[in-house]
Length: 451
Ligand code: TRP
Image 1 (cartoon, rainbow, N blue to C red):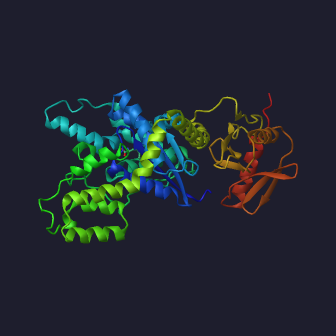
Image 2 (spheres, protein in one colour):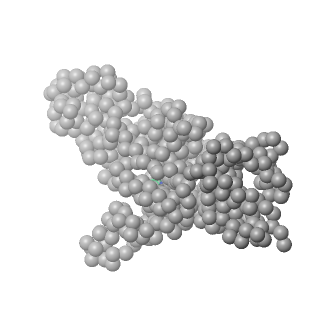
Image 3 (spheres, rainbow, N blue to C red):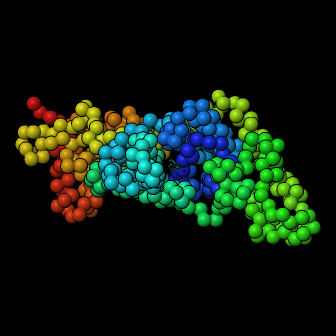
């Protein structure tokens, strides 16, 4: 379970998915999530949507449509963690922790922000005209999305590679400042799927809403048909040979057909098939491939309460990871409870008389553990896994109760035992002297305070 590759990607919720989004991002992501080695986190980036769009109805509509599209397309929410970014309060909280370590100079270099500045300068405006802090901080929010779940692979378009690199940069800085040798954050890698087609639109340019050349995905068969009828072709008449390799109609067909179907279509075009007929073939193919999903899509859209439940369930799964992890991060930066600090006996060992502390956390499998850190942050002990938080809490209490400690050294590490059971292990130390010093530090840390 822990060895699976964690794949994470977000979809900004500002529009309605079209055929190009489906072939370029949605379909490959759904297929990838079926790999038994994949642990997929897919989410609606609705906080990001607010950066680009101040129309609440559009935001709301888009969230619903995108959720329904992914589910209708066959996403299995029992396999993947599918959620709305805005349902995870840990994400904006982590965004702030990261904002405080992200270099302003790094964000100055973000392409999206720079493009807006350049445009202002070009048109003689103030460089900052119309630029919000949301746009400026966009990469930090995205870094929080990615680092919160320690994603290994982040499938994105080319325009997003820089953002993934910034996430690494910011994560590394945090690790360095607060990790004390521990890597809190996994370094994510952008995943650019070379084999996935960028679909051409009606006019042959890349299919994109900004070119107004899209083919709708799940709206209705009629709308799909109408769009296909507007695909631009050359003026060769029926009976004249067509050139499939210079026809984006053929490219579109190929993206959804089997190789055998494509071969057949190719020879028909070479043999003089009319463009009207060719458009019919494309419509038939798409309708066969997508008709069933389209029906599921409309059923889902009609049941927003069910969609809400599905996404709430996803948020719960995501938060089972995010909440304990954020607690660890809060601890690391010094946002700690006043209660859990173990006060160390100040009597004899003045030098060591500083606070050591327990840090508890939860594993992916739901078990509870804790670390005991010395005042300088060095890890003295990592507990075994406990099935519930109560047991873990009792163990930390007992360790601090002042009873004689059962510490057993072995090679360059040691373990701590309670009632004949091992409850935790130390890391391996450089040599026996370092190990013995750590045992001593542990004893001091666990000695109750005497007034
Ligand atoms: N910025 C991405 C885009 O516009 C969407 C996104 C937000 C994202 N958070 C993410 C993608 C985290 C990958 C990982 O496409």
